Length: 417
Picture 1 (cartoon, rainbow, N blue to C red):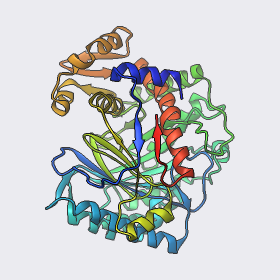
Picture 2: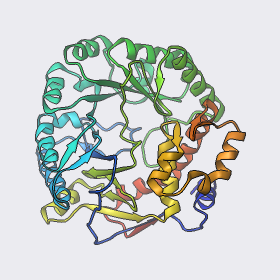
Picture 3: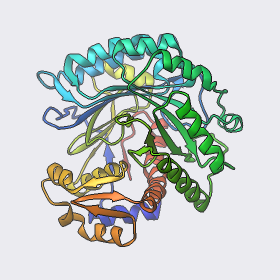
């Protein structure tokens, strides 16, 4: 594990205690009274497996997919029945994998969700470019989907080849998106690919906005240890120059930045399943974040389905937060939006942010990472880069280790991070 992330964790939690994930028999999920609760549903099936993708996924098989969807609906019922009445949630996001491979069943999944939850702020679904067709989009819209995110990665032929992706036809995308409009159409792009330069990335951004996107996500390429991608990581200084240049370009164009890597050209267009205080996750590998606990489901599709048939939740591991651990988790993912509100922190934890992390915030301002106005800390471009830089260490030290273990063991006894 990275010494940097370990020392940071120890300093910010004021403790040497690691994040300890264990197997537990307790299946209770106290979510009914939580505010700003979100939902996430994972559908792991793909037509082909991309080498660079770290997420839980398996090759598509129609029969297995149908059995999985049946189990998924039952998991939603099992969790939903833990509390009486319908719980209000802000949003629901389908990720994968390629959720659109189950587009014909998204409607019945949502019908199950609506028995237990009231969604107030939209439903999003991730799409492979091959699924951006008028019939598929119509099916999703009829089910109630309001936001879509398309995994373009790059419009450049050489980078599509590097990533093992097929060519994308921007004109065909634009025609389908014009025929079936959505509140948000986000397109994912990858930066920091080997040899990638500013002009190429700027061209991808322009192409996305010209062909139907009103929102883009520019994610960094991260070399996970368990993926089979042969691509090397871009050196730090080149990556910073590229991120700074792209950020400056988007700001010059008047695009609104709503997180470290996302920009929109339309007021209200947004797509993020990450910046939520609490959420429930359904499906294999899905995570659940509550006030005092973090849970992650098994990565094994067969074991996921088996446990549901046995009437048990498919939780692989559970972390019970200390108060300080929960605080830094809240701060880390809230900062992804580029802003942290002291009032929101105090509302969540019942203690002033300055009391808990006043010295760290003073230092962050002195170093030029954030500015502060009326209790709101806004990340500067310099701060955004170093957030990204640290997030890379966090990903490799924590997420990489956890996912690597869970890909090999359906139910490990424990993981210390």
